[in-house]
Length: 107
Image (tube, rainbow, N blue to C red; front, side, top):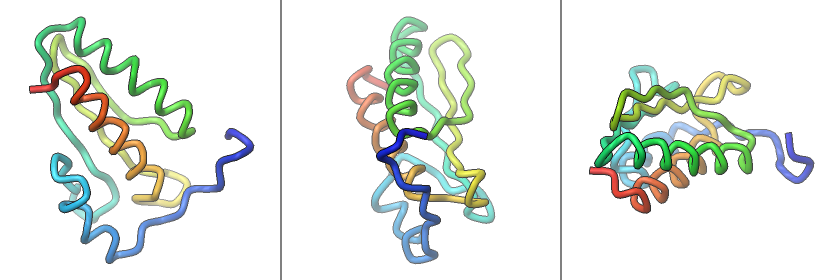
């Protein structure tokens, strides 16, 4: 873990309840242990560029997604295994993912 990052902080139930407003493009999994988003891009090159940008953000945040890619589609699931559910790191990475999705023109 980068020395300047504190440990992940689990989200409180009220913070989890506020996720639809804060992250409207994400869905909560049953049990509120993870969030997920499915994206589509113009082509594989755009999808791969998006994934490269997310990989850099994940390294900076020391938090890595569970994801898959098929041609122009990317599916992402975020959870924090160390806390047994959602944490502040999931929110930070989801926000970085949303920014990258805009830059790479997810449709």
